[in-house]
Image (cartoon, rainbow, N blue to C red; front, top):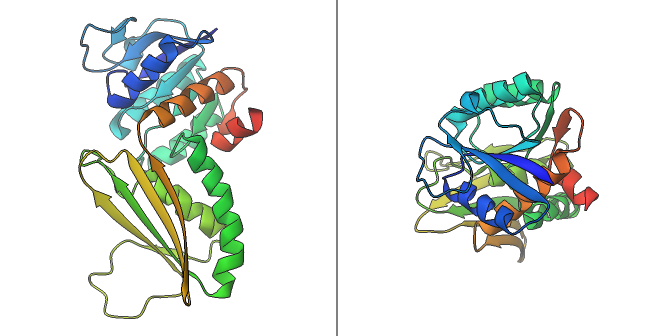
Length: 253
């Protein structure tokens, strides 16, 4: 059985992961990290990761960007694999993730759902065919009104996947309100919607002459991300140091 420390255990995603683990005989949460302890969890809660003294095989992280630095320090010190799901990291933190992966196993993904990670591959194939044929690329992402970062990590991952297929020649445009000019053919537009309780909705639009092709992924509950994180934790618990992503998990299923 894989033993897990849930970092950010009392957030919405932490609770969703905990619920899934309760009915999975192959994985168990043995400790949680959260500044808020509601006294209702089936495992001990520590307010700070450095105070945790319980042995585990892997950490699942759904917290906030400000908590990631201490988490990575803990993982290095304890040679602890970590499934890093928190988005909105700074460039300096991203570099720290890479440094940490040289000492222990790190799985970093902007989105843990199986569907999104399959979409990343499909978009590369589409971009190689459609963009040279004159199609413009636009992304629209929608999330709930409590989401802090914009655009979403998933939207950036989708754009990066397309740009990778196009040899990195494209740049991202987030706001056209200050421009009075035609659209640059080498841009990928990214638009953001925040409202209500939208879990996650991403449209990738390839707009050509007289035709439009749209790829859409809609998450109807946070469970899709929690399920992916649990699968990733099982995968990572038996891996050596290195930097992994969800494509590695998919290939291992």
